[in-house]
Amino acid sequence: MPNQFKLHVVPPPASLDWTHPRQLLKKTLWHHLIQDSHPIGHFYIEIESEEPNAYGVKHVISGMSRQHRNRSTVKVAMEQIGMGTFFYDFPGKLDAGVDARRGVEWARQKGRLKTVVVPLSSERARLLFEELHLWILNGSFRHYGGGHQILLGQGSGCAEMGAHFLNLALGKKAIPESWIRKVYAPNHLVGGARTGRRVGMLQLYLEGLEWAKGPEDGQLIATPDMELAWDWLEKHYPGKPVVTLTPAEFPADLEPVERIRFTAGYPLESEETLHQQWARLRLDPA
Image (cartoon, rainbow, N blue to C red; front, side, top):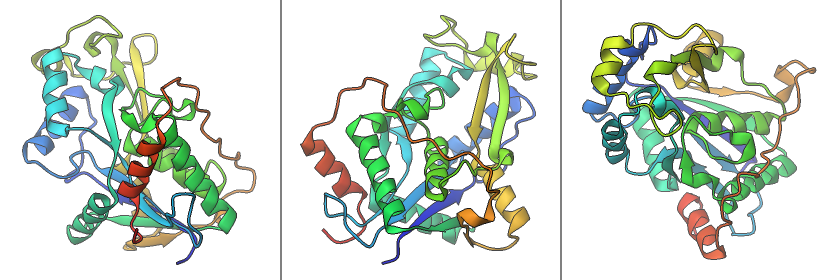
């Protein structure tokens, strides 16, 4: 088994329309209604090592997801948080290895998969396993959402996690700027506990006709985007389902990637939970 990292990129079933909040709402709701497996796309991370970690694991595949996706969608609708969903702290989980493998194969069969492969040294492979271990130990995996600062260990969505591990595999901040989706959610459409507003779906639909101009009247949404990542890969490597990248292919003056500083203050997980999570993530035989 070689030392390598893989980022599996799954775009949404059809392009999300980011023209304005109303169009984004319509497309996102439709993808949820048709029960697509990845309504907004997904990043899976896969790490392979020649040597096992402390839990006897050499091969994992996973990604960050919400617990009970449909139930949480209904919950935030009932709470009337509008565009606050981009900043909401959803109960999170790491995808089980068998589920992630099934998801990757499903996307491959649908023609909705591109994979970035990064060869690793033994030391770099151990580093990635250590980062994932700390992600579990510090309880970050229990918190899913775009409002978290991943470098503080607060949690993340699948996009931020995938981008972080790709950067970590390459040893530098190599994610292209063109992978990052940036818009400002209008303040009056951001509901929830952080704002004290209630913003129902009807209000979001009726009033969501433009993005805010900037921080003076909006809240920044900035996240790696699976659709933009797919477009970049297709532009630079047209027609290739698998792309191999190495640090040498990126400018030497790029900043080194930051390790996560686990300062969120979540309770440390028990040794029993650590064993359970590594058993869930592993692909190699127990």
